Amino acid sequence: MKHQVFFIICLLMFGTTCEVYSMTRVKGWINAIKPGTFEQKDATGDTETSGQKLFTEAEMQVLTALKKREEELKVKEALHEQRAKELKSLSQQIEQKLDQMRRLQAEIETRQSDRKELDEKDISRMVKYYETMDPERTAVFFNQMDRVTATHLIMRMNPRKASAVLELLDPKVAVDITERVTQFKQGRAEAMSVQ
Image (tube, rainbow, N blue to C red; front, side):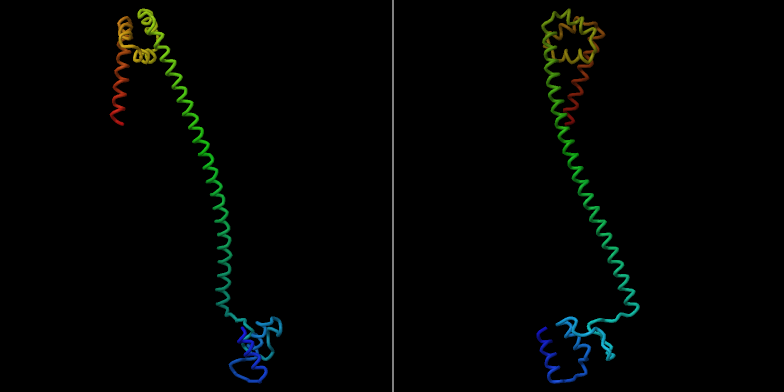
């Protein structure tokens, strides 16, 4: 820039004329240094205006198409940014829901575990009650009890006391309980072999 200013001053001071540098070009340089010093169009009829390039019709169409495409891309970019924000928000909501579900699942598992523990204690207590009862009275209750419950109780009883009760049961009930115990033990063995 300093070199241009120096050159312009030299041209003006010494009055050197050169066909390469038209007056319009010199005015353009001066306008670049101090804008607004000269009018943009010169009446001398120079074909080149100060720094402005004239475009052909085809170039104008291409530039117009490029400008339109740039605007379309800006709109699409804005839409993508909006969608990205929405997706981020949805992702955060999903994570929050998953955290809630995990907490609920842990709470449910804890409650189930507590319930199972209480059930085990209740069943153990019932087993002790039936073990302390006279085998004849226990057999009367087992004859009237549903087979699943009777099976669970028999399996937990002391084997000597359980055999005394089975001996006094109705033969059909004793056979049914025995089959259920066998199936249960067989199912457990198969499950253990699969693992």
